[in-house]
Length: 224
Image 1 (cartoon, rainbow, N blue to C red):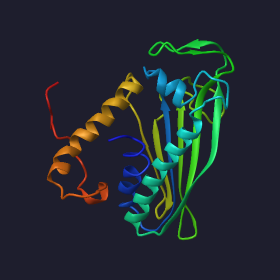
Image 2: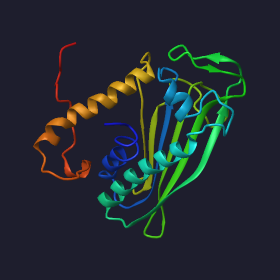
Image 3: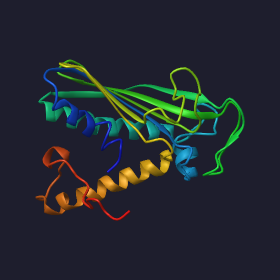
Image 4: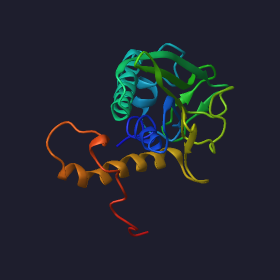
């Protein structure tokens, strides 16, 4: 029901692959602005925001978690595309630092100047003897933290770029005025709820999205 895994890291690339012939490489990117997250544990203890670079005691756990998530997604894509999955590697962890003292309103977290305000993981998976999949996961509490980091709230949260025949780029984000963290939370919840009818009707055992038809909005037009 999430977005990594559950959207940009696996489901969206698989969906796009249905409109392509031969595929050479997939690059999935998340640039998630998390200033609206109210959980101090997630922000400070798990991501290390507000701490000096490298001072997060749970960083190894975070690295292992994102590696496990990327392995799940890349294995699912490899299976769906008939590839022989071989390995996953965390190739880099990058930090962006707060340019000035900032207090995040939602959580009360104080980001002192020079403390971590963004983290970015890059992971690479190999299949059939070569890299076929790259996942970049960027989580930031501030915008415009430097070249290559998310600059504006209008920047799309997710992008999938596939080098193939034809090559495609697909971006997915929020409309103007939407609050990113709230929208992301609702997206994750809606995805899980919309899968429930399929899960209830499914055979017993370990299943993935490869075993189900695509989820659709179970509430239809709903009541607004």
